[in-house]
Image 1 (cartoon, rainbow, N blue to C red):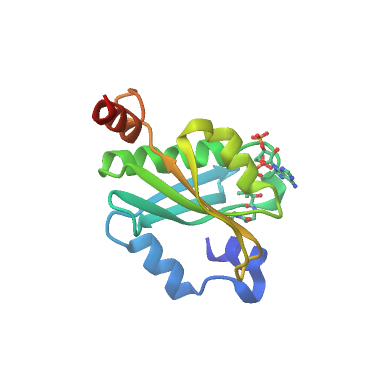
Image 2 (spheres, rainbow, N blue to C red):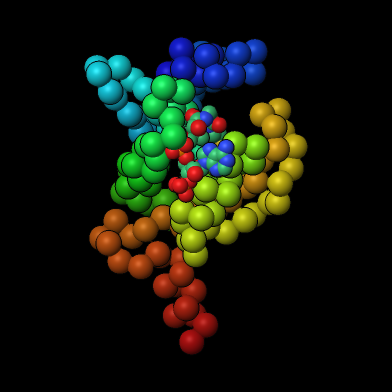
Length: 152
Ligand SMILES: CC(C)(COP(=O)(O)OP(=O)(O)OC[C@H]1O[C@@H](n2cnc3c(N)ncnc32)[C@H](O)[C@@H]1OP(=O)(O)O)[C@@H](O)C(=O)NCCC(=O)NCCS
């Protein structure tokens, strides 16, 4: 993971200690992508600042494996793990310049809610998006169903 991180972000890469802290955090969810016996992608989420919300700390795919939509099954694995740990939302500070923020909104549709419009960060412009996690039982998104029952 550290190798992929440093290759991508160079001087802005998370330190070894920070990577270790994220992966080892209590209730962390880690997704991995393996190809040809090699780790070619990973995603890490940890408890965040929203009640029952997790934050995506990192998602990274080896450049040789990008452009095939592999990020979606990777995030789906993290979502499933978060669901089993009682989380209802995943907050993503998504990069704007590489189209990732738009792709997330497109992909998750009504499950995606913009919490903060595009703003500058050390990693370039970012958009903060909250994604409702699907019910692990396959039912409707939890927050949506709870809210509609209150509204009625
Ligand atoms: C972001 C990242 C994980 C995406 O992984 P990926 O599997 O290669 O994603 P893809 O290239 O298949 O693209 C996923 C979506 O983004 C869109 N996209 C990708 N590059 C784009 C660009 N330059 N402009 C507009 N849209 C773009 C694709 O069209 C696709 O959308 P779709 O699923 O609706 O068709 C990967 O690019 C990466 O590791 N980047 C470096 C680290 C990083 O930026 N992490 C995100 C931090 S928030």
